[in-house]
Image (cartoon, rainbow, N blue to C red; front, side, top):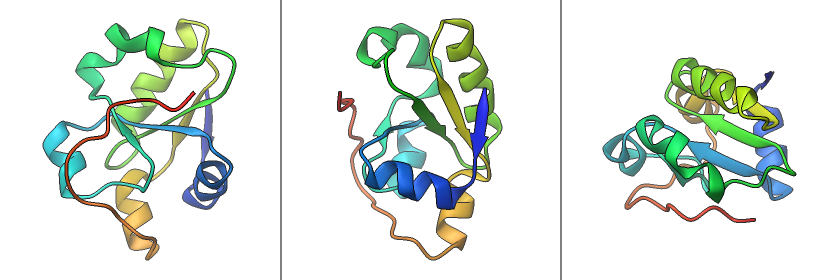
Length: 109
């Protein structure tokens, strides 16, 4: 499993990478990275068919702990999973834009 920082994440998202937010739906609604898709960690393994196995899957949570665990689980399933170190907290602290509101749950392919 690879890990990247928020600067690398911002570039990946700009380039169209899939960014999956594994926090709970209420956490996501409180503030998330623009373009991030909400798939809470408890549902991620049941949504593997929604993910593109041919492209890296970037995972983010609040601090990087939950997303690291989910990245490890995806790697075990054959995905190229990437953990965002520092998570949404680091994203917000960097002054980058944040979106609030309902969860987007469709993954762009």
